[in-house]
Length: 67
Image (cartoon, rainbow, N blue to C red; front, side, top):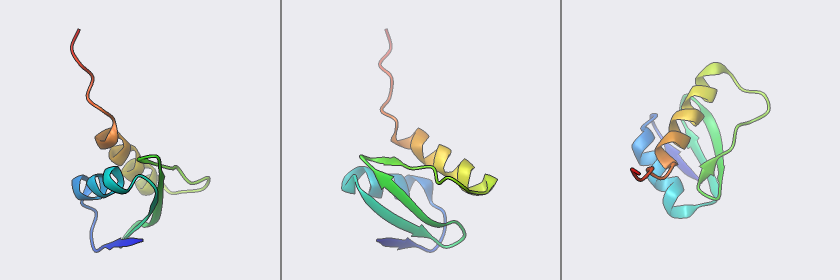
């Protein structure tokens, strides 16, 4: 488990991309779990945690190649 003193989406996403499975703790958000390089949405969470997880998963999504 890695502790982050503030919400830095690019750094947290990079950590999840490298390790693939685990837990990170962000000071204002609490513990966020990720599996297979994607953050899992907890069953009960506030809107700020939901928005943070959506933002992190957007950063982890592979870029779409133009057709």
